[in-house]
Length: 222
Image (cartoon, rainbow, N blue to C red; front, side, top):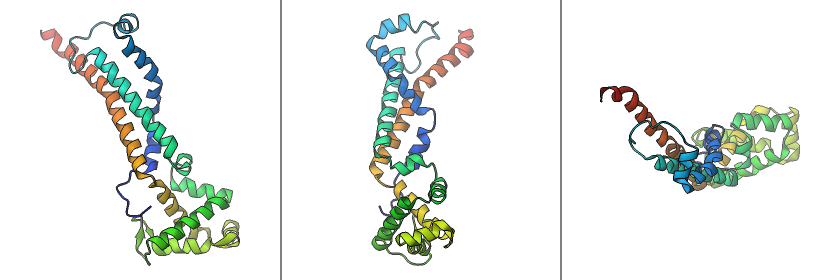
């Protein structure tokens, strides 16, 4: 991971999307599949409604197909998310929540992981003083966090309060950000599929909206 990988869609963005109502559309995929397989019969026996008027953008069958395609795209995005998204990002919505967990539970494993990752970052992309990693974390602050967490005894002193806890916060935050930007291709693909799926799922609603407007506003003048 390079701290200059700004083009990467962060996993936390995808995690936020999964917290919305969007994933619920996946539950409609089987129903929509049957609607496509049994097109005319489905509309005759299940979708009994008064016609709103002539189709505007799509036919009824095309609208069902769009909903189905949108649901599949969202499903594919969710599969990529749960397979490739780092567990830290799935468990903690923000780095503040992550840091709070590490410090409140004295999570030695996470502290050790942070130390190793930040040592690798410092060695692979050496910066000094106020130079920033991820356009946010000063190199000196990250270095101080690494020094404060070298070895079990040092970590114990941080958790016990013997050493100032605040010194390690930049290191933990930078580690969370580094994890947040890993597997960038999968992250972008996940984000794209869920956005495309949402768009496809909304298109039929736009079509129906135009049909309603046509019926309510323009039909009386015909």
